[in-house]
Length: 356
Image (cartoon, rainbow, N blue to C red):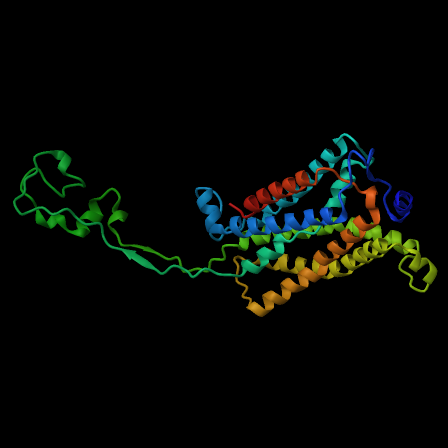
């Protein structure tokens, strides 16, 4: 079994591995645990994204600092989710490399870029909520601030009873000076006596900022992941692993290699369509002065399904094939630590990416 696993290294387009020095002391996690970590992170981060990606919730917990209505901070705040994901990957790579009992001959940047290709789901989940609009508030008018009543003949005994100008005089009470017009003219802040009308009838999409920052961030991360997928597909193509006509060579490949190469090729093909669509979508929304697009439920469902079966599915196929092919050659320690790091950094990216 060990010799078979070592022979599988020839199917990798990279020359680094992560192995346990003493498998009896440090056992390698099974493929189900590796993929299960991705699934758990996806599920937890997606729930967090729906909660803390909501503009009003974020506005309340940040005391108004974040979650401003109509904010277009997502046009640049996507940099934070991208930077945080790369930072999380770099920290995980450093943790693996410095864990005693394991041999890891990769460079930090190599594993950092490799982990960018992991599947992420929260941006798709946010897309399912991003087009949900809150009902706008109605216009409301506040009445004039009540003017204190004073009976005829009232005489003020102190200048402190003269709030604005000569509403009350030191002599006899002048009822004509008690009019609203007089208050508006003599008050140092006449606006407090005017009817306060607020117009809050514009559309409000509370998940929009969080979705757009995550969507643009995912666009950039998937562009980076094209390097890993392209490297894998180029390696397989150069060795003739895609040529079904070479039946002996094709059927001699391990099943994990077939999945990894197929996932990389699928990612490249589907990813090209996604990146084209995403670039147009991002360009349109950046150029728009405000969010004006309307989408019906069937259209949203169709787009989300297409996203799920494109690069997201390609990532899963690639990783499922890789961990099955690698076996003990990919033996990363501290899976729980990795998951916690991804969850924390992803949560920070969602909160900050939602905009100011």
